[in-house]
Image 1 (cartoon, rainbow over the protein chains, first blue to last red):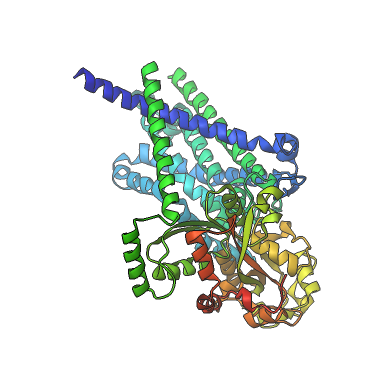
Image 2: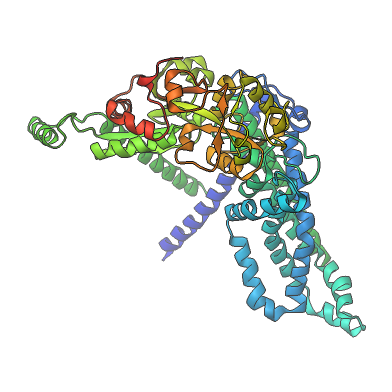
Length: 294
Length: 313
């Protein structure tokens, strides 16, 4: 018996250690590869972050420009716009699920949202490409519908279920006494939701939004298919631009491994890791704040 | 805790030794295995009776690289395997850069590339590679149907002006009154490098005014679905294609015949690189790809046969 226990313990420990090692080694690998732009090819971090001159040399001598500002700006603007579109819908859906009609939502809406989460991103991208792009072209009388708007709408649809389910969970977790107390004081249902439930669930909702943002930032395929990938700052939300993930995906195969171009792409990957790491830190901060309050 | 660490370490060691063994076995399989005399004779007999010509090839080949060469390589592998069922061949696309790097590292036997190894790899690495010019590929400008009705051919200067975004409307070159939509490939693409060198006289395409697409298939679709769009793909993508039209350059249409005669200028060799001279299965495969037997398939798939070229580069 004792022997068996050791085996189980060893297996569990090994898996745990393995996951930690894996995460750390991926981080270390990205750091090692991504720093090459600054150490091997002697570019400044300011150039990488704020210059819009993107023309790295595809060889080992270097001497190109690695300004990734267009991609960084593209990523940020598309994600923010996607949040702007998705958050109101998600919040409304979460309130409906948790407060207005818990019974129907458990049978219909909850499974629907869960299926939503499971749809592969390539499907979102493809649907966007075949339906959304021609639609935008027709509505705005454009020759080309690839645009910031198209990218944001696709992303908004993608992150809608994540934000909804996390927010709905946090709404459900509000103790029943809060509601009862508010109703006892003569509040209407709307007042209860707006003044009591929503403020109490704020940390959870914020966590949902940040998780959605993190997913949006890292999404490559769906956005790449509808954004147009033009290396220019967008003039308005109807003009095409590019973002970090699409830029990595389109050149990673062609660029020579270890060349300046390749290393510059690794630096973008490192930046993405840093950004998502920051989001996770923020999530932890926000949710721990919530715990202290309650 | 110490115990766990040592256990993990030993597990890693086992994994490592296992992979080392497996790679060793593939190596020995690739080289012709010395067999006892009697067995060797009987094997030779059966080989002679079934496939009259060459002795049966065994072993394994790995290849990766250029996506422009991928369709041809895939077809050649299928036909080569029919003749030599005992060979196993793994083929990956992934881009010319990947192919060159992997063959230089020895990760694959054959590295496929649209461009010369010397333009991407450091000199000492490129010098170790042996080039096999398995075929010639030509790139053609393609336009949307409604442009094609009026524009059949462009001069080199017009083409340069269009791709550098100096010319912005089709009516300036005799087409309909429509804005020109540029559709291009990523900077690291071999197709783009070739088109830039021979069609655009090395002028840099205007990246900040063009839509980029990851692969030629998507590019074709984008050009066919957007009015006023222009892009470029390899002729191999235009086999059985009716959704877009090609445009001539300086009055010469992009056809296989015009490439053979040297009239059409936007072409380049497709390279299959080996590290050192090709040996065993890889050599047999490369010989087959360049053989007369296979040359008709090369043309059917929209590539030019290297040996038939009347001009060289």
